[in-house]
Length: 230
Image (tube, rainbow, N blue to C red; front, side, top):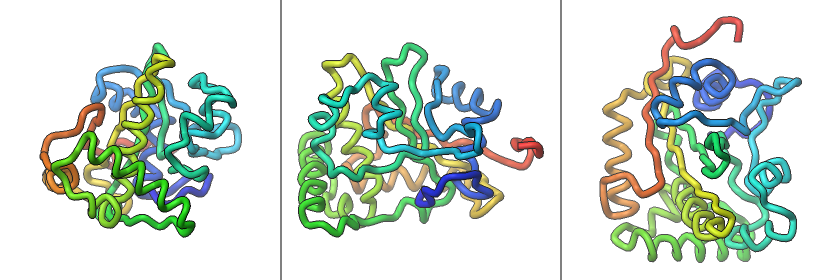
C-alpha cells in the first residue's frame, strides 16, 4: 500500500487490511495461515488512527525485544528511513514476526527504487544484491531495482532479519496478502493473482515456487464480509 497516512481508509488494500485486523475476519486469515496472530498494526486505537510502522520504531522494537543498543546493528543493512509495513503481527508465543504486504490490484506491485540520497541508494542496492546472490542467483537483478523494487526490499528485510535475529531466537515470515474481488476499487480474481505471482517469482528469483518463509494468501473479500457498523 502506498498511502501511509493515518486514519480509516475507505477502499483498496488499506481498507481491507484495517478491516481484517480489527474485525472477526481476522479469524479467517488465521485459518489461511494455520495459526492465531497477535496484531501490532494497523490497530484501530482510541482515535481511529490505524497506525502503520517501520520496524525500527520504538513501539515495534520494544514489543519484539530489540533494545536501543541492538537496533543500529540489526538494521544496519538499510538507511534510517525504512519501509512502512501494511501490517505487523506476532505468533502466539511471540517468537515469529509476520511482516505483511497487502495488495488489492496488480498494478500495486510495480515499483522502482526511489531513494534520492546516493548513500542511501548505494546501501539499499548493496543489501539487495547480497540477498539476491545468496538466495536467488537464478533471477534477474535488474527487476529488483526497477520493476518489482518493493517486493525486492521486502525479501531483503526477510532474509537480513532472519540472519540477524537468530541470536534472539526470533524468526521472520513475509506475508503477501492479496485481496480477491475487491469491489471497493479494482477487482482482481484468484487466477490473476496466482498467475501474476508465478510470473513475478520466475522473473525475480528464477523459480515459480514461493520462496522460503514467504506466505502468499489470495484472500476473498465481498460485500458480505463487511459489517456496516465498522
